Amino acid sequence: VELPSADTIMSSLRDVKTQDKLAAITTTTGDSFTEKRNKIVSTAGHVKSYNDVRLFALKTMTENNKLSARSNVLVYRFTDEHGDKHENWINDGEYGAGQNILKVMKEHDVDNIAVVMSRWLGEHLGKVRFEVFSNNAMSAILKLINDD
Image 1 (cartoon, rainbow, N blue to C red):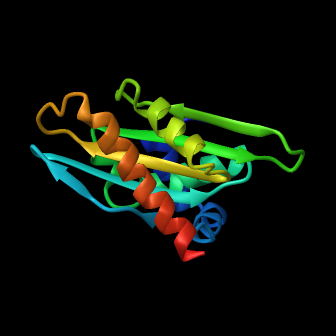
Image 2: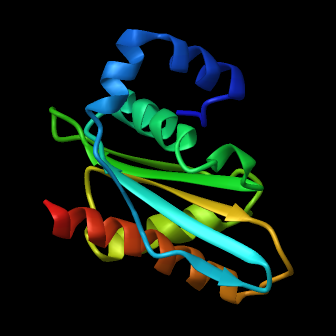
């Protein structure tokens, strides 16, 4: 699964069938984190297949000006209809971010959820960035779970 390109996003906005599919996806945005001119916001949604992950990523990237973010880290973890576990991440320039978010998802036994953590870059955050990214992603995941 890849993050959707700007061309994919633009064409999906013109396709009625895709728009109907995107409208059916429920997403939840977590707490916003702002420090040293960095802004970090995560969005989570339920997924049960690679197609769900693609649609979730597409919907998320079309909302809240995500395309202007310096990076959009995508992490997903789901169990398919055959009981097979699928998980992966795209760091999108944030080395180690996806791995750390996935690690926290595993520790909290999060399944059938994808998250996009968006960062508008400010000053260097140092090693604390991994904790900030994971906490921000978990805030969106927990809101999604609690809203069910």
